[in-house]
Image (cartoon, rainbow, N blue to C red):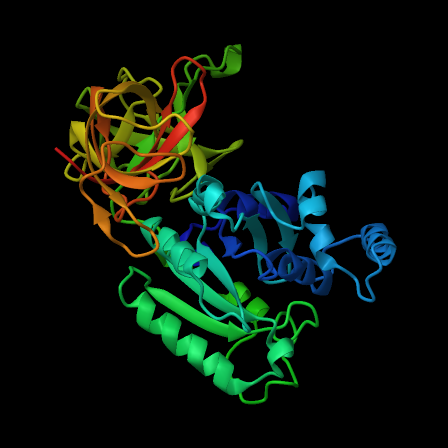
Length: 441
């Protein structure tokens, strides 16, 4: 990813610089947590918030009072994150809860996802935009079916970094052999998956060992603490900076006399680096032009890259509208109406061949016909059930779609933005499926 050293010097105030940093996401890490019931996800997030001083005193006092009212002799940090009343009553996480906190080194967005198999769709939603997946296991239980399932889903979603946090080490007397056994078992399992970067960290979320501060109870562990890893894991190179992709979200035509000649195309850069002077093609029309300028808020910038939201101006008066894509002339996606994808089905009415749905891909919306369901994937065993005739709720399978208009897509393994889509029930407007494109033809 481009860095400040590559950008031409621009005189800015401290406030403008802060806005730019947040906008470009250069210091932001999105990570999703996953784990079985009682593995301690919510407690771990509470510990991260507490030890990074990201909660207010009155919040902590309220949690302490609630914990005392429940008869606990400790502060139940899970109460900081299990916000729904039904979650608190059952002691489980049901929906995806997003939490925000920051350290001097980085800003964080946590997607606290459910562990239950019936909430797989929620986990897919929370992890779909994550840079890192954090899977918790209970040191006493070791790897479970759900632990493996979560790792498989994170692999399918192409989350580039994965941390296995072996929690509750205090309940096994901080035994190194327990850590070693789970470490070896998971590492061997991970060889079957697409996990480019894996870190295994022994922790105690309740007591804080190796979460933010290094544990004195585990001198045999020489790796990073969880917070140190989260602060320093390198995510800038995970995004596609080669294939320029700019889905147009909105055409900017100010009505003021001062800007009556201004015509810009707003959206979020999905891939590559865009610069003034670049020769580009507008798809699907195929018209070519060059980028004349790129605007960020109220000023011009020398380049744009993922995931910046900018306005692109073209030198020629080309017909461009929402749903179009701006790409490089010699490196453009091939429009396709036949889509081969892995789909996670999210509703109780099953997905069946010949079904018609709305499909939203980047900023383009179309209709799609389900041509075929090739197989259902058992995310616990990786077995492909080719005899299946439908996909039920929370199931994942390989599906063939035919769209009414060509989509400008890339394989999901190449670009998570242009390689994903959602399926929508046209009658209700409800999102019923999420897809990851294998290929298009």
